[in-house]
Length: 179
Image 1 (cartoon, rainbow, N blue to C red):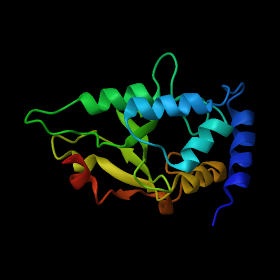
Image 2: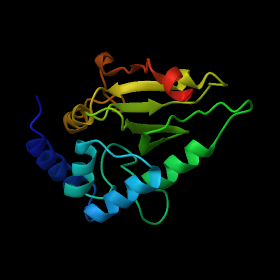
Image 3: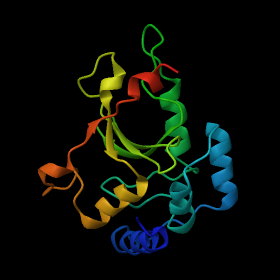
Image 4: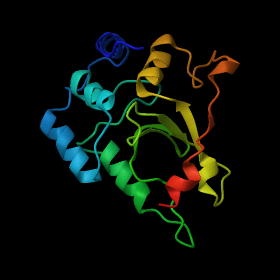
């Protein structure tokens, strides 16, 4: 079991060392406003990450979105993605899945906010036409685990990633997209 206090101290240290100047942490009011704007609550580890480390601007590659603010935020990207429907009305972004990072090329890291541990998903739409459930993968069963992988430098996105860092299809994607 992960000690979240220790994990967040390590994330803060790495974020400060790699991101340069960190954004200030989100306030309790900002988190509540973000939750109100998207219409659902966030898992406790995600709240603590934004409240105790920084309001985005750190993390793997392109770095986490801020919750709120100018430009692209977790809230604005969620609302944009949820508003997109394909011909026939099929959604490609499930409810209560908050995008936290843009990997580029249409790919996102996102947290399933229905999961108490904050399962981290990857949306990889390239080459997918319809059948959007095939674009969703589990990157980590928990946000804490995902952060540990980032701290260790062993994520699939790392240049020297080993074969054990592969993602697997998100089994509930079809059901969640049909809601």
